[in-house]
Length: 505
Image (cartoon, rainbow, N blue to C red; front, side, top):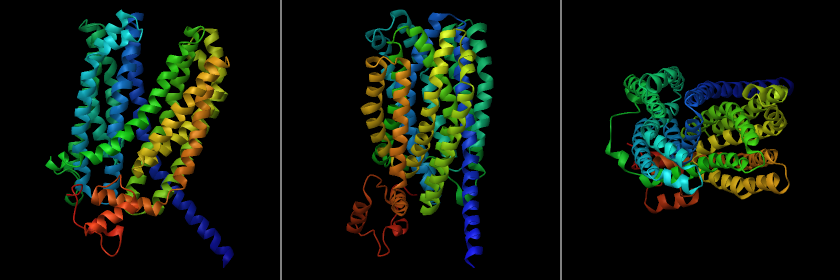
């Protein structure tokens, strides 16, 4: 009996892992494809502007850095709080709550973006104060202001993406982004050359691309909501409920934004530090090439991060902690395997990679020397990205923010500077610092996540959905609900049947 039972158990476990992996992959590949298409749009814009002249190209690069650091990165952090609320609410079959949270996110994100745009009015003065060339700073500041509609439109689009992804509707996101990418060169040609707007035309074209993408996604979202079953409808029209529970949403959004910004800003600072090394034209070229390679490989893990966030949030909301834990294990394994494969391919092609981007023999040599360190960094970054998605699904963004602050800014950047400047390793020292930081961080995050009490995480998700008290620890949640007379004898898992909070409709 024992010999026949073990293969059966093993077969069931294998089937469960295969089923989870297929569902994760079905969510991950469209999200990864969408990231690649978004990256392609930026490459196309850069190529068109590059033909206008070196001053315009330098202004574009500076403007993109400002746009990403002070607008796009924190905005994405504010939006990703939706992954916690919408994912868990949809898993708990609180469908109306998904729509209300989306409305709340749309309002908060738009207000936040308007604040960022207001700050951009001082962008030129700030860049000049930081030592940038006045002519380039002026052009970059004007270009950034012209990109203001892009930030507002992208905020709406990012909210709609999370709204659909929480319901495991992701393939249309890829199709819409693909169509917008196809339109990009047409818009650029029309506004830059046909309308003779030059550099300003690139900003207008970018805004039109963003508007087309946002409009396409909005049309599909309306179609999707109208064709939902009445019992599963996630959008019942605009509700005043979206103006409630802002403190709760912001308490989750702030660590989400901090987690993303600390990661993003680290790479931007590393690029700027490479400009302080001897022969900056060579080191910055190498860093630019390796960061582009890093970004392309990173997109595979980033899609899996979004898939893990959705699946873990859905399972916790549905009070299936074992399934949430299984999705965590499978997603981390998949992310690591994908990045190991990417690292292996990079090592095999390391001598050819630099030549694809540059004709300078020294840049090609520097790139080939940096690839092994880049490969190590990718493996750690892959695990970190997927684990960050798991944290978002659990509503544990604060842990990710604390780890990023400690590892990147407390250890990673100082260590990279020590290797690059004090020990004379140059650009290789910067990459070595990043690789070591990513590797150690992946071990720390894995230990933290794998030590989670998943039954407690499921209870915590119920508390979030029913009572709107995410920041309160589980023991304090029980005490609070008991003191208000809303906790039954069955315990915290009966909260969903208690008096509805402002989070549920």
